[in-house]
Length: 67
Image (tube, rainbow, N blue to C red; front, side, top):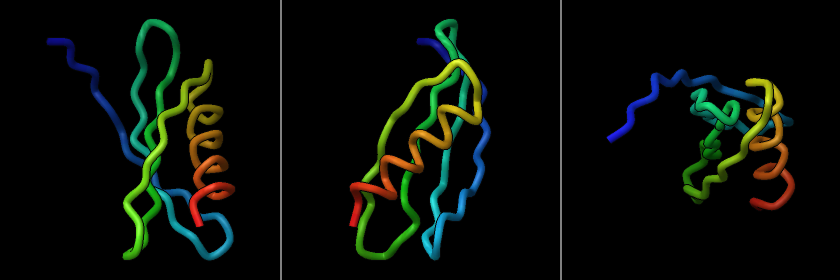
């Protein structure tokens, strides 16, 4: 079993909040974002060469398609 240390950040876009879990693997940074809302628990995985790139892509995807 592989183990990767991760960190969590909170992103705010508009009046919506997103929890983003970030970790680094050999192929780059991976981010898993979940919108913090009572009605939904959808999440999305994204990968990027930079931590911020992966996080922002995950948040943008949820912001755009999770309503």
